[in-house]
Image (cartoon, rainbow, N blue to C red; front, side, top):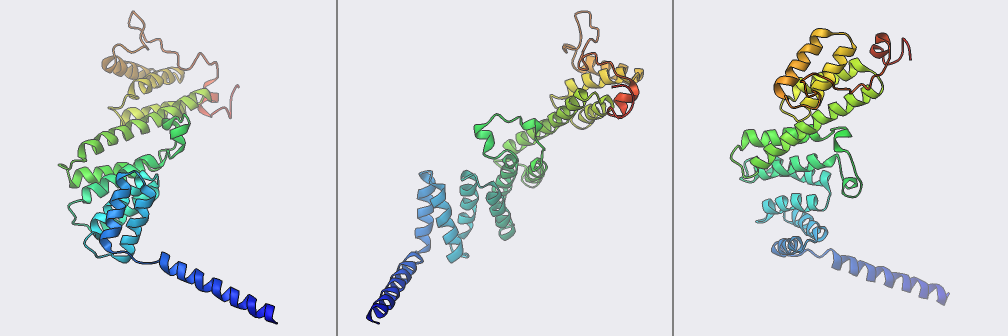
Length: 277
């Protein structure tokens, strides 16, 4: 009986000690302390600690003197902590709560930057990844964010970088279409390859991918026996890329992207489902 009583007393004591420790951990610090701790942590590169202090500041002082700046810092801390989805969510929250803020351009820029990098993630830091071969996914969202930034804040300090990233996104998406065209060429699906190449020329005319797209168009048109399309593609290639590797020293079109595949037209048009293999 005494053993049972001792056990109960010991259990009660442990619970009381744990409760006291828990209460001590949940002690609310002054608003300025949270903010200064967060700034100090960010300055030292400790973004985990910075995020914890900024989260606490938002929780306990949502309308305090540091509230708006803390929300901005939280976007940055999460981004640096490689929490890209969290950074984007924090940017969304800031724009929702502070639509007229002088720092709305920064929140838009960071939201776009998070989306811009979201498709690649940590793997790209350690493994060779062909970005152009990946589904663009969040790239279109990043493009919209950067476009919104330029439309609303054309004189923003972040406008120049946003504009360059929009160009990079366009080039990346054009290269993605080329990647698909090359795949179709390997599959000897030349009509599909032609369609992808034409999409590049029509939708991304200023991208570096246009030269190869025109070469693919010319060759696939030739294979499909569409003479006018082939002539027009070669003429456009000659006008815009007179020194293209597709021309020999005499200026003749001699590209060989199709590698002399010998298949029937029906086989190529139907992706190998009909005709000779």
